[in-house]
Amino acid sequence: MIVVAIIGILAAIGMPTYNSYVLTTNRTAAINGILDLASREARYFSTNNTYSASMTTLGYTADPMPLTNGASTTYYNLSVVTPTVSAPIASSFALKAVPTGNQANDACGTFTLNYLGVKGVSAGSVGNCWRQ
Image 1: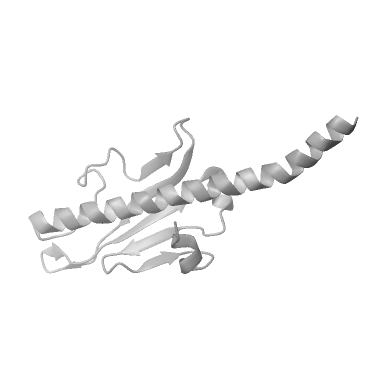
Image 2: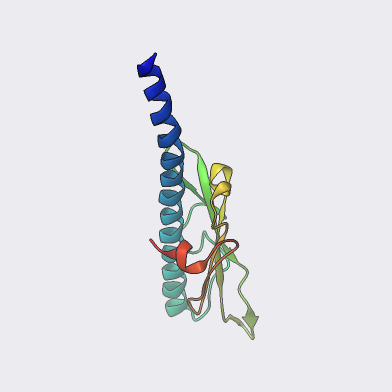
């Protein structure tokens, strides 16, 4: 009986810590994904003199691009918000990583990044959420 009680106590302490760790790990993957997407936009602009509104043009296989944990569970969807078009070129872009599934319980919500490098989140603090 004592062993069962100890296991129960350890599980009560361990599960919330584990769930928090998983959310934070997925958040880091989303940040890395959005930074990679920004890098691809910069490369695209350097060769085409315009930003892309298409994930497939930037080398991704889907639009929006799901981030999965290897077990086909999607935890974020990366996408390009339609860039601002002035004259014949897209002069800016905005990127977002929208949490899905259990990741929607994360305190930071949706991550955003624009062409000026301005970071944002839909909930929580930018400083705490973008910290890796």
